[in-house]
Image (cartoon, rainbow, N blue to C red; front, side, top):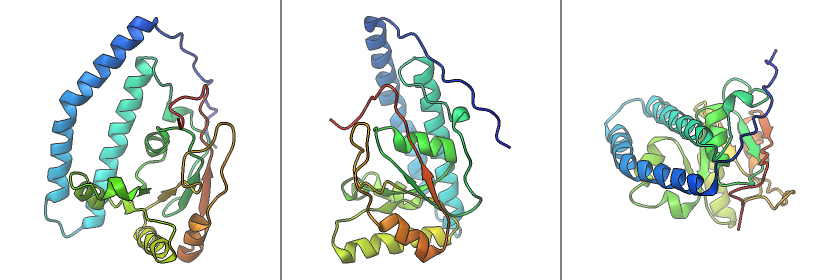
Length: 216
């Protein structure tokens, strides 16, 4: 049985000048600390290993702890109220394909925080950036592609390989952020992937109330 979820906390917002000051402090801490975090992550990604899957799980665990710490900090500052302990439901053990709607910019961080290490389909523009590509490859992330059939097949093959290695794969089947209060049509990729790898397909619903960090 799952424990009953705690009621959603409603924080009284700080006065606007205080909120802007907290945003400035948060960004300042990020820009000071981020180079050290990146350097540590890059070193772990670059070290030779005979167990790349084990290293990928280690790096995904670091992702999860970093996102959990980020959400705890934003919750304490009353900027963003997400708490993994209030998430309802559970995932099956082992590999599965997770599909979710995509209303906000924080969906990847909140889902990773809640369910643990996952392999995501990353936009090629970001995945191929020289400064982050080695880290994403080492962490088992998958490069996205265009709508061309050969590109789609390449992405599905790479994601299927991660599933066969025992990883979970997160896909946003709308291929973009969701419209306000609704959904775009789903692509078939996630469903074909689950059939190919013969793993469960698990839906996750993301709610943002009030809507924030949405498209546009």
